[in-house]
Length: 473
Image (cartoon, rainbow, N blue to C red; front, side, top):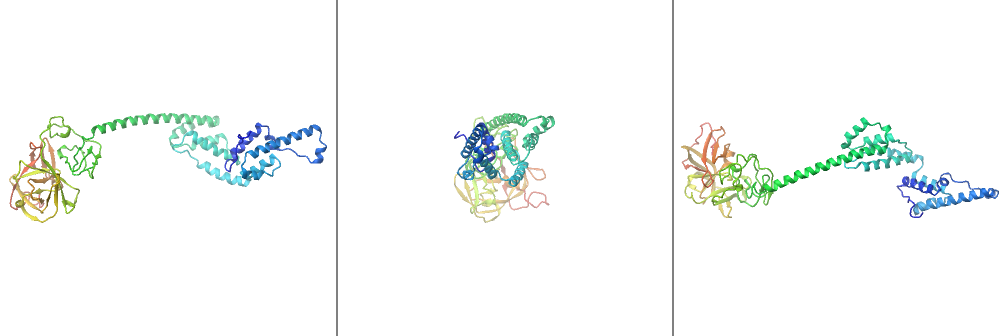
């Protein structure tokens, strides 16, 4: 039967020999291959009876058919090994010795197979059926090399080699089943049934997880733009947390509108995306003065927008103060010329003043201030400004002199750095010292700004206790 004869290769002798035995047996040829027949010499053949001659011719015919079948099952290189064999039995034995090896070689191979058998384990993502196939292939190879493996040993190995997720199934089978009363197929069927149930559970969990993720994604996409649109606190570009941060140098986030556990500063340019808006119950809207939302989420009619400008101070190409680029607000127009008014700004990097006469001492300092409208003003120094607040004289350290700046700015960040606690609530800004004493409390103006009136004074000591040497502003 050409085309149906299995082909022998260098690695498939075990399977090939089994298939060839079945094929030869189906043609009633395996007996002559396994046992052979006795070929008489000429003298003995001459004295055979007619019945004996008929049996001899039949044996020779079967042997040649079997030998031809073996020829069909090998390639050219292997054919050379059996081409001189005069019988199918001889050809079969040549192939067996060549491909399977003698007893000593079989023992060496068996040792290797035993080691592989002991190390065989089911992979975490492997199916039960695939692993059983690997195990059976290995055990069949061991049997062909002389190893005796019964079904109970095979089932025990199968249970030992199962992956971790089948641990509870293995324990249940070992406790409730007698392996001597089971077959390998029954055990495999039980394992596959448990595998199917686990796959169903995983699919249900995966479907639920996807549904929850879709809800989360929908909630996140719905909230985009309401976390930090165009406003990055002390930074610009990509926000690390809290909504989207869009645009370049377009704003600041007021301290009073920042929720508890709120947002962190962004950096770079472009767009960023974060999660979570914190507790909004204590956040007051600057548009309608109600709690629970921010001004850019407000549904009430908008108030008049102020002429706000943002600037970034740089010192000879480096950032003033050595930190990240700092944003600060200046308000121009209605308070022009009133140098006793100072604006409390959460985004300012440093205290700044545009009136040189207010400085008690001034040290030269280079650099420039870049405003949001692309205009720039040079820095000309840094020094001390002495002012009078609530009847007491205080001094402001590290104030930058910015000629042409029409408003005076107090940096809340610089105040916090010096140990003060600043809180904005109910339309007011309150500042306490490190001892918890309230030193400043101002109301928010109609323009949603916080201003502090401090008259310039001559250089005096600070209006704190005599034991304290550091200025408090």
